Amino acid sequence: MPNILLVFDRSDAEIADVLQLELEDAFQGDPEKAHVERALYIAHAKSKLPGTFDLVITTIDLREDRMSALSVDR
Image 1: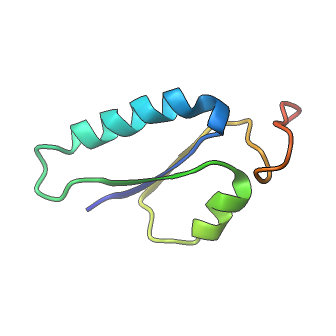
Image 2: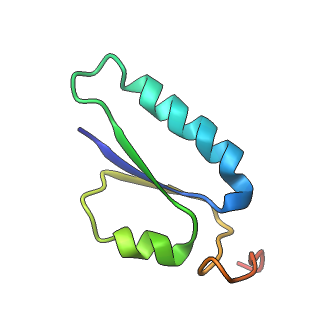
């Protein structure tokens, strides 16, 4: 079963929802369906890594933690 981690800011929740549904739908015919987890900010993602993820999908602009402002300077 492929393990996928989506790292999207809460402001991008709709995009993450759609992507998660698309990924899960893509594996519906596969006997080993995808397992998709989500992280909302960098610190949350780091707590899950290193893990046994086959794929990590992220946006460029992320918060360091849930109290940080969204940085667009990167």
